Length: 191
Image 1 (cartoon, rainbow, N blue to C red):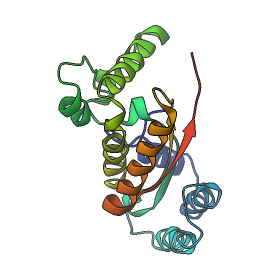
Image 2 (cartoon, rainbow, N blue to C red; image 1 turned 60 degrees about the vertical axis):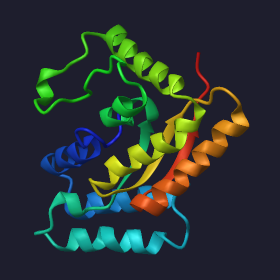
Image 3 (cartoon, rainbow, N blue to C red; image 1 turned 30 degrees about the vertical axis):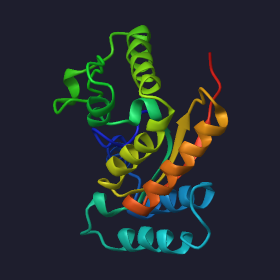
């Protein structure tokens, strides 16, 4: 449920799929299908994304990083890179999601996971609604580094909802214009 940022979670899942016997053609078709069902991709962009998937599958020498990817379930709390928190919430006790030694960090249990997740959420809210565009753009920038072209980003509205969604729309525009990433939002209402 964490985004593609720090440790390229989606890329790791693709690596696992290939090592488990999924073919390049099947993996490319899964990504093309994700583009087709995503609400983030404008119809005019779809043929180009599908063609990039087919081109990648047809060339066995191309690295996995060249496959355009769609992250269909990223959470804002987990996808925001640490540099965003450093800039917007100095002093927030944000644990690294996945340090360079990926095995070095594990949540002790579900309560530990929720504590980290809630700490991130509090830091996000403390930065204010005006920070939403920078949040969306920071996630998109990280994803673009790993050739993720589509993100369906889970957000929980807070504060003035009209302002919240206006700021989300601005972040979506910045993600597309500055990083070539299509973003749609999955809105959750929890707790």
